Length: 167
Image 1 (cartoon, rainbow, N blue to C red):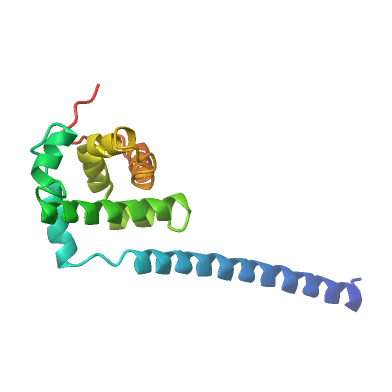
Image 2 (image 1 turned 60 degrees about the vertical axis):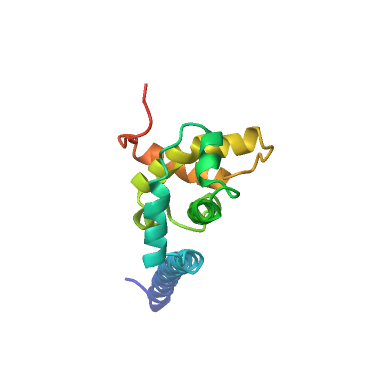
């Protein structure tokens, strides 16, 4: 026969185990909510102006070399176009930082910034960014954006960008 002491110990154990599971679940949900809040606080660029700017910058494809880009869209020759390029570039850099620092879930980021857009923008502008890193001596230029691109490419290898030849 089971004594009252054994039943009390079993009930205490069940209560503690249930409390631990509940507390663990609360921590997980709180962490997810904190990540979402961080993402939405940092990425407040989703409005009509952002959309117009993205569409315009994504159309800057009529250049072959970084020097040609600078002639058409550079900060001296076309300051408004260059400012738009920098804005979009920094938005994706920030998204990459959030991903690198594990402050945002990759699936959430790729719902906000579709992987096709990440891949397309990086592959369009990577010659310019790599030129700025190597020739212009700015080795840290857009490392987080590149990290975001590599994560998108790893998750979605089937995406093909219109301006890149694949081997």
